[in-house]
Length: 462
Image (cartoon, rainbow, N blue to C red):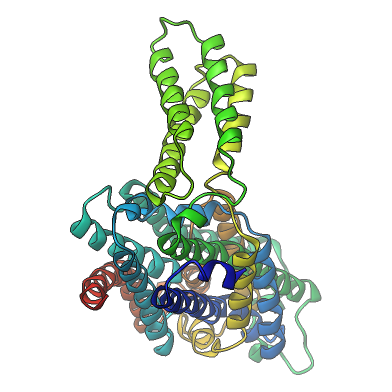
């Protein structure tokens, strides 16, 4: 399959495509050992699992999470940049933007990993996407980055660590109130010789490590798939901007069914009738003249379908139609959405392999920071379980709602919350917390500026 679509490109473009695909794989592998270290830190530092066993176990569940994930997060990432504007610019401009995004993400992730700073791959990718998209917009005009979507994503990245911090404190107080077995509030070094913690707390730690790994794969794997799809659409929009099984006839049939609902369910003098009926007519006319070999038309119809669906989703949600008519509308909206929100099996498999393999190397630097340097006291069994439970719950809910979150920041803030619960703010290591906070604040602006600058640099040589 790879050779099949590369054959459609010139030699130079084929080489650059391979370079971009390798760069996506590198980013996802770095994501694996950068972010997944958070999942194994607690089980390693509580000696619940040996390091090698923990890393292999986490890598497997990352792989599985990526394979079984949906596409909502991937689609959200793709919406951050102006894909629809790529049709009207030369391929070398699109390549310059894609390379700027990928190189920025890799440099920042590797740099923060080298210094052992828990930094968010999600922040990194989003900053790079927005910076590359903004630079592209300043040169070529068009819609530019999707700032509304960027605000939604930014809010999820901002709130999730605060939520994890507060929830971890609450869980620790709850455990203190309900659990009488004091061994779970000790670190392995504090236990007396031959004294073991209850098996149930160790089981919880393994379970939460599994869940964090799975949900990390599910959430961050989708980000990798979204990034890979951006690359493919930039190089070959006629092949990858719409689903492989896209059919103009079937798409038009769905639009006509929605149009029939509007004509039957709404009176012609209704405020909503004219704009909705007009949207259906325009969509039908565009499908009638659609040429699947024209990249301008392919990206245009993708953009039109997105706008049409958004309008009809609003109509159904606001109950403009009776219940039965709304049910029909929602079913056809889902059919239309499948034409531009889809995943390719080979892209998911490739990202899953890279994420899982990356998990198994380079993990130690971040694990040491999480386990030893956030708090002044050694991580206890109760702290490890509380932090992991918070992270698993936050990431799982975020994946369900299609919001990208930072595993790094959620888990780090959870560990910090448990340290505060046990010894107050003075139990935190100020230097480490400051480094994490500075990285958290700088990642978006630095990656934004770096990606924009690299775009201008690369286009000089493209």
